[in-house]
Length: 630
Image 1 (cartoon, one colour):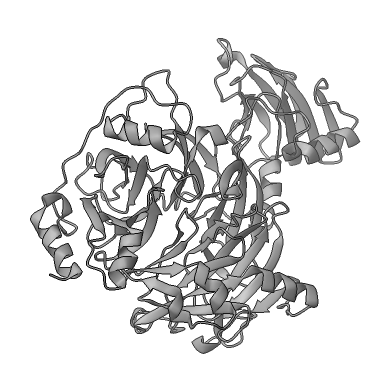
Image 2 (image 1 turned 180 degrees about the vertical axis):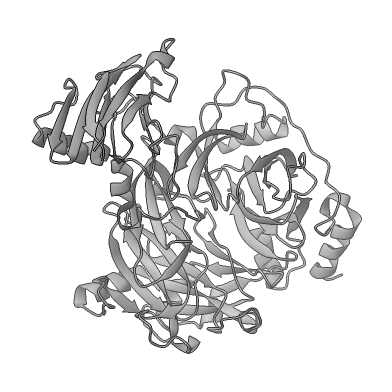
């Protein structure tokens, strides 16, 4: 019997492995024990023992802490969400590309400065959150996230869980796949321009798709400024980096340069593009680049035939790109092919040296099922691939798949598990680093259908938690999510050390402090109103349960800037400032300074108040803006 026939027999003989369509019945839910969690990453020996004893626990009792932080993209909401694992409790929402009335993000002066030239944009489509690394390990410093809708990349500081930098990428359209350099550290963040456009996109070549191109974009992780771009053939999709620090990989599903569905599906093989970082950096030093339009960003020619890139043919319309934690392989998921292509990282040096051809770098193409999109890893040699059309996760062994590709009679598929429904991204606990621990897998399903109470035509998505600690995957939790949380990452809590209160000299509000100093104001103590023509600057402190000013006077039509400094030193005593009927609200956490600017266009008495509950006399924490009629 062939390996293919064995796989088919295995699928048909076991209910837990059977393929089924979108309308299939739910699989049985495996429930594991419910004691407390270990406080540190377990050794492989301890983990194996715990798995055997069934101690991979899902319950986090009141007062206990989750073992992992999960960073979820907020999809069309434009935000990032922090989820605790394994409880799957939502802990925090970090506004990034959206407007948030709770914190004042997109309303305050500080947030507008961070958003820069895109501060006027009201929407975002957040896709791929990824944390900075050192030597292939999460370092807890930053999380980066892309905005496909408006071609942006943002950075979140993990010490305060706030966005502190945002960049609009030039010369491209629709930033999709985003990853970080893993080794030796995250010097670069790289991301893909998905949609092809003329370069420059200035009105020429509108009707000639063969003159449309995309870009591989590389950002300096510390400055959040463009480092360089690589012009490529075809539109780019997802991406990942290897563990040598030398190579980046991107997938392309439109090698045809097509502009419609039929054209984009025409080729039997598209490609992954491999970028040689040392060669590109040397080219930039030598000046082997050009610039486009008004942009001063170095642009390297990485089209087919370039010495800086290699195009490896991959079937068909490849999507996800995932590096195995042992550093040996890069997985390209076929999407319209039932296969995942396994590329040997060791062969890439030979490829750039001209010793082998592109297809020789592919060491296996295991057939897994219909619609493979993304692959995750457990650190024990197993891979977990989402099958979008089959609504399943397939667990398979990488080395066995390579053996089968080379003619050995071995069944590489370990299990197929029904998920609900149409899974896109999946993620294992620390599985995108050298620390993959094989405890948990999250499947982010695009549809929920009959899994939750009906809430109208717009259904929630379904994030499902799967225990992968034992030999069999066990589905242990369903979690509704809004809107489409496109991707996630899971990091052990030991990697993160968030602050409990702000530092007074934090750079997030440094410019506001500088303006105050020009006005002769000491934010920690002064409560003053300064008029400069029709511009009024109001400085006040807050300490529970009162503001430093009970009232201030302005004239109708004045531009008013209110700066509030929270003097409380107690953790979690957050204040707010809301001006009624003016569309103004902001958060001021302990030792933070926040400011907001608005026009006082309505004469009369206007109350301002603290909207974050802070004290038994919270309701009394208010004051008046008295607006004289013009």
